[in-house]
Image 1 (cartoon, one colour):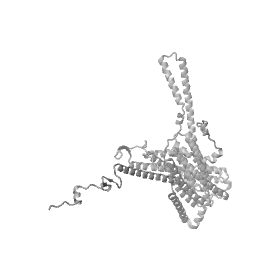
Image 2 (image 1 turned 120 degrees about the vertical axis):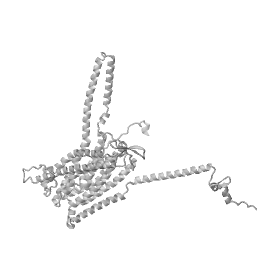
Image 3 (image 1 turned 180 degrees about the horizontal axis):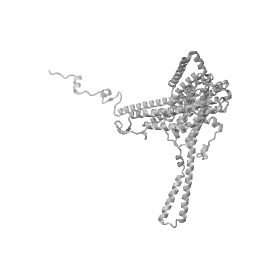
Image 4 (image 1 turned 135 degrees about the vertical axis):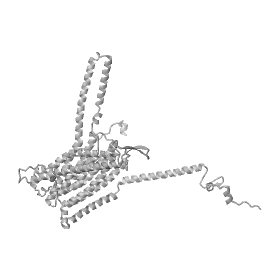
Length: 603
């Protein structure tokens, strides 16, 4: 009221800038999801909601992971007895994340009005086929027979498997050469002239176990040359993964386009299957290789295998991930700025030419004829108008690349898979992924606002097929953790010595089934909707039923009112005849004779 009385109703509101520590420890968790949904649409908002959701849950796993890592450092043993229990908590944590995300997603969808939303998609422009008249809709539609697509499946599926196997062999060959280089490093004292980094590019290099049975000493762990051999090869692979992903992405797009899908959802779902298969091989081939293939029952071999898995995982979630962020966020912006700089230089040259033409026209304009003077004057005016339009910022914004949330979802799913599958090898992985998620929330927002064109808002009720992919990741994580513990944990090895290898295998299978049963029970028993949504749905249902009842009562009252206007009242009379008699059909003369008195017979 005081502001209105002093005429300050039009003054802009003042916002206090929060302190650095407030933004660091409190503001980093905040996401204006409602504002994102209003401006960019539900599809973008759900991505940031997933990052925020996982970040909150990663806090607990980060604390637990640091506790396990400290226990490992204190005992000096990487294979600490607490690892199987940490693995069990990790699997339960992944189940909780997915169950609570289902609630969170439905809450946001109900809040934004997209719960159970199904989009009526149109045919993709790239969809090809023959026109066929539809008898039901009475329209001409594009028809593509299913047998043709199955023929294309017979071509694209083997190609997908072939490219996946080629990628797998190449990555395994790279890591096999790391094993060979590590073996040469251990033998460098006996053979000083032997080159450590002589590569052997052949299939026979895969599966060699020569360096695994060598015991690691404290002196060697402090040697920088040892860590160069251990981390050099994963570092090279991590820096080249974006290029490999780009090539595999183009191959996936071409194969999916070849399969000829009608709607954008069908096209995107099949593309996700191909891309995730390629990415899973690229990012997890080496981890599974050292976790299961390049290991044995020897204690030193197991510890060295876990060390290689932890080293590769650390490089993937740090250097490789940060390099990917640079290529996705800053590299396109640098290219756009370079293009803008070149365009401004060209615009400046054109402006100088126009100014020179104006000076020439001013000096020699009087000597020209009237028609020539008007022609040049019109040309200069058009040039000035084009220059003014060329100086608009809209042309610089058009140089920005289009926004696509596909790479962002792929990175988020891969980071979640790192945590759920191999945190037992590197317990601090949840903490590193938590830092990556907090950075991704800000950097992706910066990229969306400054480095990309504004995407067209798309309505959706969740993250779509990515939620099914995440459920698949949790199932794979159960198999990975149970098998990894059975093969590398000292507790399971002691159990295997008592009950045998077959008994240990049965125990691992039973553990897997128990964890999957727990996942199923949690998915089946826990409500997918929070209490607020359930109450709101009950309230809406009650209001609809009440409105329906009131409509029926009003209709009944209008009907009874119309009867009263006709002079009919319940239980009343009209013309001396009761209503119940008036509602009966009037008997005919013949029926009256049958039911009334009989006529007198002649005498």
